[in-house]
Length: 276
Image (tube, rainbow, N blue to C red; front, side):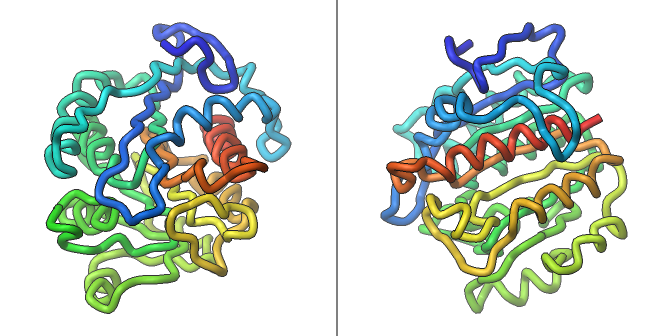
């Protein structure tokens, strides 16, 4: 366990409701590198946030969670091999239905392994994708399991709901609109029509508008507000969100304010405090 875990709060593994697992991996992304450093920075700057949520009227002091630190990544492997190895590692960690799992990336490719690991516990797991991008490439840089293929890979065998997507390549568009349940930001209540049972929620930090979340590798305008995110959490509060991740923060683009890093820490806090 890290000396300074998330918000420097210690608990025990046995008592914890949430297990925090970080994955400092960055695969075949563009030239704006830096997401592999996000877990370290999110932990460091989580000290800047309060433990209390005025949205859910609860404090992290009321919640037991355990931060196990970073998963070791073998950098000698290619992207697809790394995701396969990561899945095998996570299967040995994600073993209890008594806990909920929080993953901190890293780029969005880590979600594929995290989702698969949770699927070994929950067979009918719905995937909700909060992202600016469709992530429906079949191959990206010759790799099947890249950050640009997350939604396509998961949707091949699972129900997938996308919220906030506002950009895609031409060859992604037909797949996205034929296979994915698409929810617009101005119609978030539609989530209630599709969500039943167990949920995996993935938050790409470019889901948010660049005015509040600029330190991402591929920002896109006209994104979500923090209030949109809180509304989504409220809608999902009656469902069992058993898996959750925050990905694609690039702290190297966040200097000197680190406001996007702090936002990522708040995103994690609000998820934990929205869960009953």
